[in-house]
Length: 103
Image (cartoon, rainbow, N blue to C red; front, top):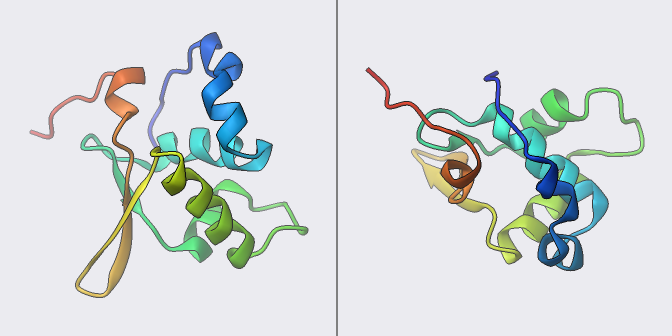
């Protein structure tokens, strides 16, 4: 995982709050830590659940999948598949954090 910064304004983002649930917003921030320097991350709901919500017995992979869809609808996450494996891209991550190019 990577260290990512979060500005206090994140929590006051009215547009995000109106378009997503509390759990989706928490997931969104957690995804920042999974994303590489090109704002990409593994997109398996099972994997994401295990890394971001390991102790949440009331959430399963289907719930995380639904939360990801909320973020897709809000324009915060793009889902795609490469060679049969799911991935996500966070198009706005560079607005919130400096993404250093891979060397």
